[in-house]
Length: 585
Image 1: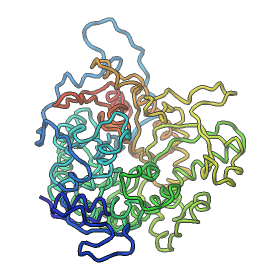
Image 2: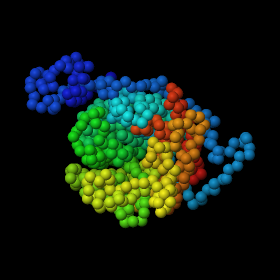
Image 3: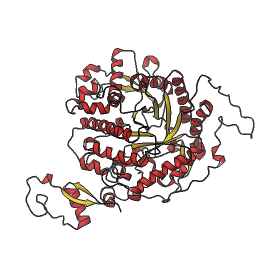
Image 4: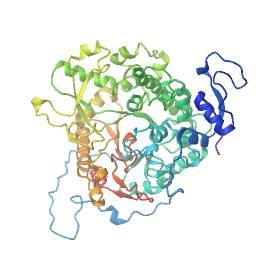
């Protein structure tokens, strides 16, 4: 049993918990203290009491499913029959007769010998073992268990891929295809069940073994500290990322991770896609404590806490691990003006400003927000101090970007300036409209093949990747290396397929990886310094609000089978083939 921790809840939660755990009578009036003394404001009444990890699960989440396998699985050799790529990547000696045109190698392209390519996964999406070994609940346990309709298919990640027990086999499988790097996320609430305070040494041992297994298979371990699964206790105590209280807690957590794993992990990401998880605020009402912060302000309060947390964790990390590479993972698609009008160009710039620029400008350019963001937030965010700006500026050793796709941007019907002047405009404050199709004058075609309808933001826009990488290099990265820290594709309607071989033959995802890698090679041949890439994802997993219905995996996982068997898809072989052909030996 983990150490107990003091958690403060309001009247309803306190009375319910006290009644269940300590036998208090719910008839105590809310307008008095437990000793009978009258208080002026009953809504301010709070009762301190002790909850252990099991109490938090019972009171705040409810029943949790467990997998059929609840002990660590030793790896078994990957059968040679599973390593045969699909046609036309492979020519079977029998039957004969099939003919495929050979693609010649472009001799002007190459991946350097030290270019690392890998796969990525995230703790909440793949680990399962929700309550195992002292893990505390996260906000996503509430979202998946308690918020009706929040998850598309009403599933939870209680079991998911059961990576917590099957990680050895998972690492062996990716190594069998020659993968150089594996990027995984630590579960903050597994290491520190309440987000602060006691450290779970069982979790430390678990992640230590993941790292050791990677090294055993000659796979580079890469660690992300935070990928959205915020410890629930921090959200309910002070609002999580809405409060600067999180800065000290995040840095303390980072120190624990650096001390435990920094002797073998050289590549670190502090936070994953803050644009996304900050825009998840406000969290659904009635399921999380309401801190009475205006909804429109909440994403930017979160962003401020992220910049302070990341930059301080970076400085601590560089002091503890001077040779490590530490960054954070930005995200967003390439932004194309739909027409050549000056107003569309302005809309595109504001889209960059309020997306990538929101975090990239402070970290890579100035130490502070760009002019567009600052004009909006200055009325409700405190300014950074001179010391904070100095800490933020330069707090990344690479420019890491989750670069999946591209889309068009254009001015609102009323014009950009009219939108800026009208705070009630639905597109305010960005004041940029979006589309996935070319203009009518250009034929109205899609920017690229559409992904699964549950991922409407994603299209196979690989033609725009060279321009995208050039923009990142010219605008923010400058002399720093670029890491494509996520990219991938949700094969349309894959979740509705039932025939195994039909599932494994994923033609649009395969063509995405084929064309993406060649677009990356093109940009590199033109001077863009890309040093590594991580494909999303190593296998089908829990894709947040879409549950198990949107499939990004390069391996199929049969979630209806208690053994959760894994199978390589054609796209995985296509990804690996790019390096068989183009990486210097």
